[in-house]
Length: 138
Image 1 (tube, rainbow, N blue to C red):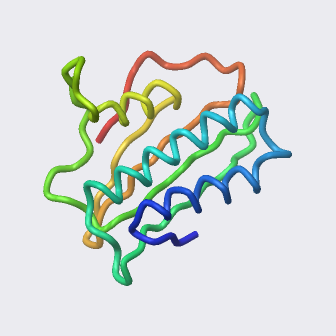
Image 2: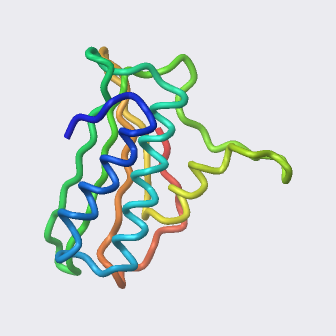
């Protein structure tokens, strides 16, 4: 789906994801998916340029695996000079924790760049699968 490069884009993406997956994934996983998608779209709006037309592209894919459904979220924007990085915010800082939320809720996440911009993705292994201890970002 395509959403505006604006805070309303995150709301539209959250609602659409929740509506489409409510009967497919467990409620706790759906809450994690919605939280991560909100962070990814919010980061695209705050820190990256829009795609042509002033938009951000949002997608999700479910893949059947031996252990259940694997889910990938993808947010594509026009890119930024400094790509997404995990930061160590000061305790009193009001921002800088979004990617920690993404890393904590997803099984892994990363960034891909091409000539048009960047795509930030987060993957969720099937419920009950062991989580890797390694963070993939790059």
